[in-house]
Length: 109
Image (cartoon, rainbow, N blue to C red):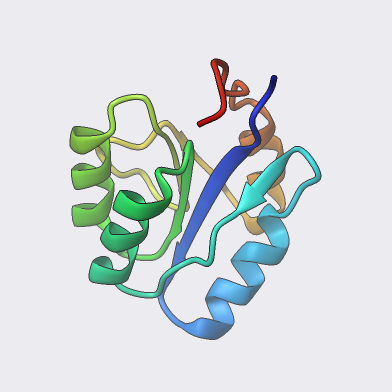
């Protein structure tokens, strides 16, 4: 059985998060609630265990921590950030970069 790819979006404020979530939504994956700060993002990483992290804003510490703690996570950012898997030049690029994420396999628990 296939499981949905989970995606966590992180932006600098609620309006930016709404725009990022709209740009990230797709039938092939599930968006988790999202965050606007480091603590909220780290909490959701631990609870939701997303397969992809989409970060728009100055969150270099989050990207580094996520890459270190979850080596298999795909990290898409809006800027060149150490630990990022891909850089989106615009919101319009996000869906295409997420589509490159392989689907998780294995049993559903």
